[in-house]
Image (cartoon, rainbow, N blue to C red):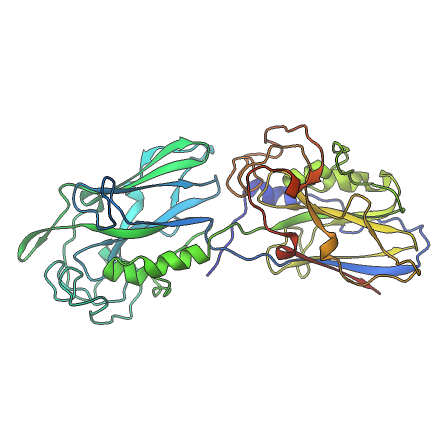
Length: 453
């Protein structure tokens, strides 16, 4: 199941609004038409922010297991709202693997500071529940003895802590920290070095004597939420954990995680305005932000300031906050699959403008052109249809951009509102920022439609 997590600060700010979605509209304008605008989030949902395969022990030239005394090392980028999870097989078994618990491993402390620490106490030995257990290194279908992959007796069980397993042959496994050591070392920025070491004395005491306990190649993910790769007490998800736990084969899980890795973009509440032809009430391309509240939306999804100022803006005849997803009873962002809708009256010659934040960024917002969209054609007919091609991604120029969903001052990772490095720039199209980051096209994130009622 794909999951999404939002920063606490961001969620709190998105709840800020004026008295209602459309309370700020000006009722004195004579209407020539009534319109409904729908802003739908159509962005893909990605289960993982980052992912990768680790398969070559440090110092080795080729992929293979980490035998006692060897380790896997890899670097990751992660923001404050993400955690680390991984899967690696305890070789010589049928389907045992090491990995963190359901929550993953936190990479920042409670104060938001990056950690450097031994995190082995957050790693457990799990039974995938897919193959009946035999004595490690002795049973005919353990990974070192089997005639081929996936040859053991099918168990049809659940993922359980090995200490809670009762099916198959009982075996007294050593403590986790007698076999494996996992450490996190902060490098700089949002980068960490992860080390997964098979300890030099990692052995299993079997009926045939002591046997080494290697670690297989594995897969890691940087994620939000819980249960990214498996859920304790439930069957394997069929995405590739079984292949690692039984055979040390990372192919399936590596492909699955790669296909489901990326930023999931919410969109914040915003403000819409109806305004006179030729006016630019919300911003001017190439000019410094007006200071009326667009910055607060672009940086924090906070509509309060712009909502309070809306009727004093140049050329505005009516306007309001939109902040409650369709079908919801409370304000909040629109996640993929949800939408905002608002209705208003307008006269021939009026234009529509709106702004709302591309969440997971520092100060990027969705918006029309600075002059807005004409609500009537040259013949005075009210427009209807898909407006998405007239919506753009803008950089408000008030905060230096960081990697979306990762940077410490992006909205889902910041410790408080308005905490990024001041940019003192101008409002420009996001495509013109040249900030080194990659952003999706508007039409892969939003679908905006207007209907003349």
